[in-house]
Length: 247
Image 1 (spheres, rainbow, N blue to C red):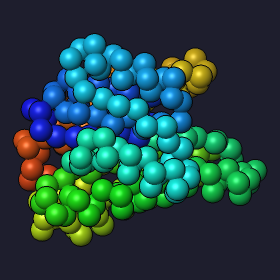
Image 2: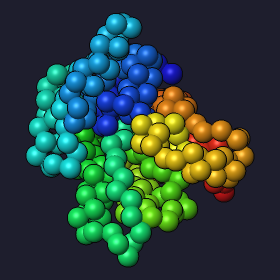
Image 3: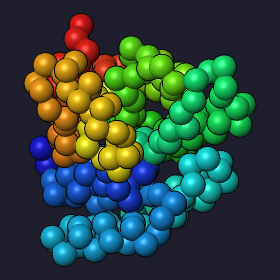
Image 4: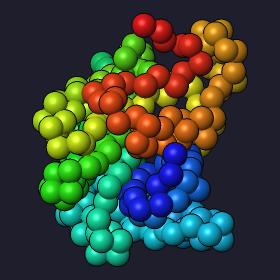
């Protein structure tokens, strides 16, 4: 998988799965635009990529703000000339039982996890259509496929991403653009590190491979879907969950 002529933009790229995706794509030769709220962390990832001989630049972005999305994508295209690969990874959780969930927490999670992906796709789709090549990859979740108590907002947003993925895949297929999703299971990241040991042990019991996954394993799936090797795959949800959900 070689991306020497490709430019990728990854949201939520300052840590976790987003950072791993940025590093993986850069290692394969892509120029990478890193977008997230924390500029200090983004600059650290940029330094890591450039020290390894890659090309990257940081673009501060809160994906919950439509104007920031428009501005960051304009700046990224100004810097690199185009965006060939979009990885919609940015996401948040605000967990609560539905009977106690505040409307603001519902809106915040849907806006950050789902609406932002639609807005980001709008920023790149025109140029992808013109050049007749593009890769859009949405990071969903196993809980968008099977649900999770206390995460009605998160599960709904991730299930919505799957529907968005399939709709976009149908819209743009004739122009050699693919749109796919990656659905991680229980992955070791900052988002999951705060979960209690009881939760971790219970999670292990339902993972046939008997371990949590790594951000790098998710990034490998993203890199594959972004590559020419995956040119006949579109509208697909690739599970990276250790067998936690099958079928």
